[in-house]
Length: 77
Image (tube, rainbow, N blue to C red; front, side, top):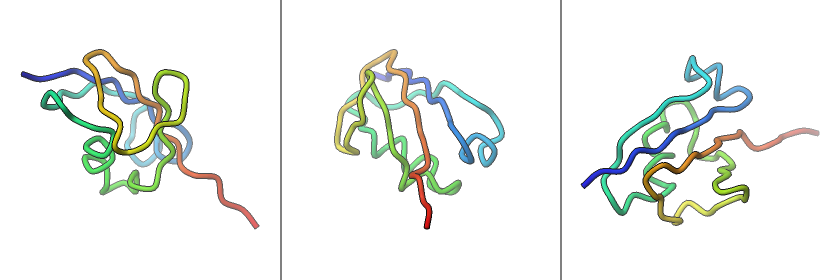
């Protein structure tokens, strides 16, 4: 069984991916880490992830129809 998840990209990730959002299918039981690994080639592995209006851990499970927001961590000096 699969689940559909919408991913919204914010900031520089939107530029790196080339779009503001997309919908992907993952196996049931997928976690936030699975999404981060899917986008590791654009540097998403260190991203802040928001789900259900809160910051989530990479081990949190996803549900069909979830919408994730991926944001690069704020850096500065």
